[in-house]
Image 1 (cartoon, rainbow, N blue to C red):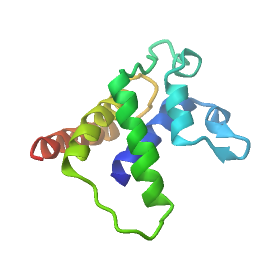
Image 2 (spheres, rainbow, N blue to C red; image 1 turned 120 degrees about the vertical axis):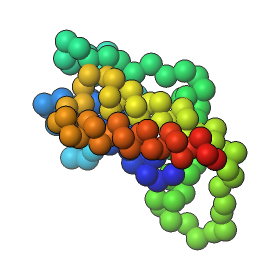
Image 3 (cartoon, rainbow, N blue to C red; image 1 turned 60 degrees about the vertical axis):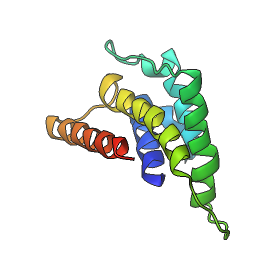
Image 4 (cartoon, helix red, strand yellow; image 1 turned 180 degrees about the vertical axis):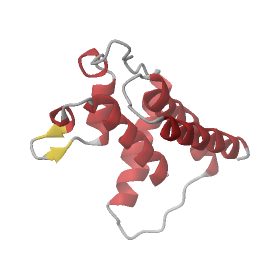
Length: 136
């Protein structure tokens, strides 16, 4: 789940940064994953290039990505000793909408600049992820 969060966060930052690092900063710090996703839904951040496309998320996607960011990621990243388990059904609900957002940001938004080799690697990773997710 942390890897899913990290891919979402990284491609959100890449999609809004462009050539100006100030677009992803809040003071001296990188914006949060939540703020980066909000900016990805803004034309002023996403239409920095002629071919840039703004992220549009469904209500379900917003809910599932929000659960990933708020519940799981925060509890794991800010370690709090406790007994905790993640239900497979919950993972199934969260993974598909989050992967769709990652795919859009990385490959379809037109804002993430990658070499052909990098693009191929991301495409293969998402395809592998989709196959393994389908097996759950």
